[in-house]
Length: 169
View 1: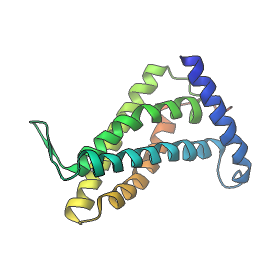
View 2 (view 1 turned 45 degrees about the vertical axis):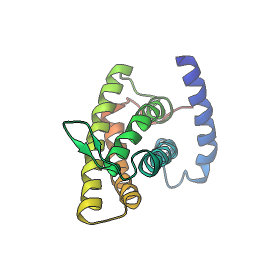
View 3 (view 1 turned 60 degrees about the horizontal axis):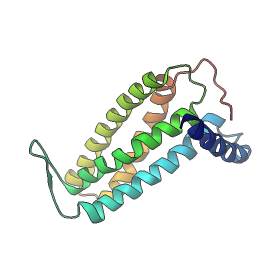
View 4 (view 1 turned 135 degrees about the vertical axis):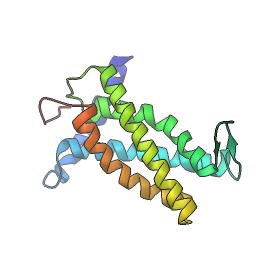
C-alpha cells in the first residue's frame, strides 16, 4: 500500500514540478507544492463543507448530548473528517517528502496542528457567522485563508522538519 501511495505522489509531484518553472521566480518549489496540494485539499474541504451544510445538516441542530452543533459547525467537522487524511497524505508524500521524522511522529504532530487549526477555524466561523452575520460559505472561505497561512509555517517547521530545504520528486 505504501508503494502505491508513493507512486501516486510521485506522479502528482511530477505534474506540479512541471508547472513550477512558470512561478519559480516568485515561489520556492516546496511552497508551490504546498499551494497546489493544499489548494486541492482545501477545495475538497469546501466541497464537503458545502455538501454537508446544504444537504446533510440543512436547518437542523446535531445534538450529541454534550453539545449541540448548528449546521455550519457540524459541516466543519464533517469536512475535517475527509480532509485530515488527504491533507496528511499530501503533506507527507508531496510537500514535505524530505522530512527525517518517523511517520507516527509526523502524524501526531500533524494532528496537533490540525486540531489547533480546527479550533481556530471553528472560533472564527462562530464569530463571523453568529456574531457578524456573514453567510456561512463566505465565512468559511475567509477562515480558510487565515488558517492555511498559519498551517504552512507550522507544518514546515514542526510536523515535517527536514535537514535540507530542497524537495525532490
